Length: 265
Image (cartoon, rainbow, N blue to C red; front, side, top):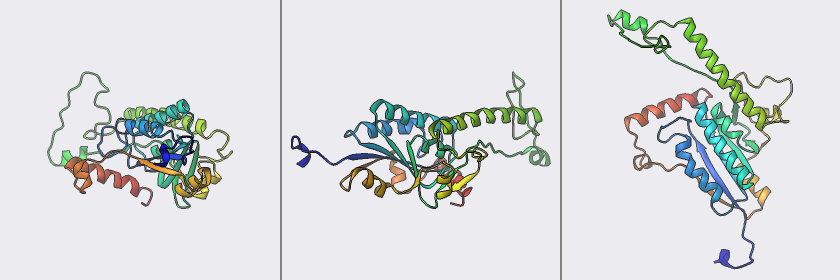
């Protein structure tokens, strides 16, 4: 009943948004703006929070979804004048670091992996395989670029050139986001945008993070020992609650594990 007593000051509240997993559009159980929009909106609206904390563990994924999620967080933070603190668990790499930069401050564990500011595209080439097995590929298009980067046809230099040009544009957007959000904190004369990663205190030294620190101790230091935390995150489906996955979910989980494996996790 304490909270209903007039004029009695209640303990500060901090909304904690859990951002864990691969970032992918339209994939159930993974991070995307459509799934996270109601979560983020509630986190900023419920109980007049003193701050919003982002608890991040992501190897990255879609640059567009990363941008949409981060932009939503920043928009609400500025509209409601609420500070945002980002806490990295195992990894905030690539799109995961894009999300971390939505925080006004970034905290890492001593063993957290941070960075990978770059763009990657990977596929396979099957044209020799199908030729050996007597399989003929038939493709008919209106528009000469409609079948570019077809994995069942030999790779064409013009297609690779076009892909690299697209990657360069996305990379520039990523770099601009980091520079804007980490303005005045990035180390001078240090190559930070070549896709490299840093661990814990190294990330702090180069300005990609602000300090080594964990969620509860930092929040207690900022808002007092009586600070109250409420965790927000995407709702899991019925099957996921019992550890069950449909075929598409299994494939997505394998892909996600492969992304984490890139960082030895």
